[in-house]
Image (cartoon, rainbow, N blue to C red):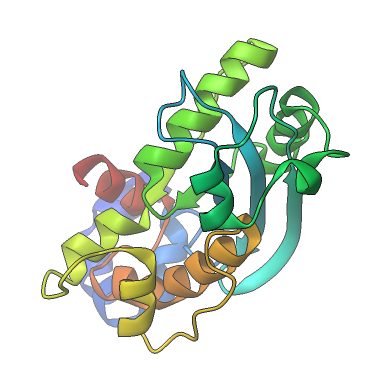
Length: 215
């Protein structure tokens, strides 16, 4: 039986030498679907502020599968300092859909994929709060934070902001502080972390689950 094979010491030794044997433990990192996600908002607190944009990229390994991107029309004015940072103003979002329809489509897009975000402790609570508020839905997707990966594997960096980590990997930085631009940058950072994870012996879903729980 498969469960006995996975416990077999000889198999475990061979698995270290022949990485493809990790497939016996389930979907490999290259098989799994991940959704890279980023949002733009009118402020920092989910309960007090709104989203103005969301973008997501569905990938398997390094292969792009699909994208989703939408502006969101907030109910209240966008602060001037946010417009300076993102370029998003009232004119930008005047014809954009409301949060309810945008978030509904995002949930349909992401399905049960693992979400990847840079500083997920900002993006994911925003999405969760507004999903619950607007649609009474719970976001239960597993999440990987590339900030936490950077702190774990790149402790020498002065900070672990997205542009700092991207520069470390030699990634060309463009279109910052717009959701799809940051999704693309996060995807490229994620691509660089994939082989690092594999080198750490994280080759399949079960090992990824255990690693995420320890982050």
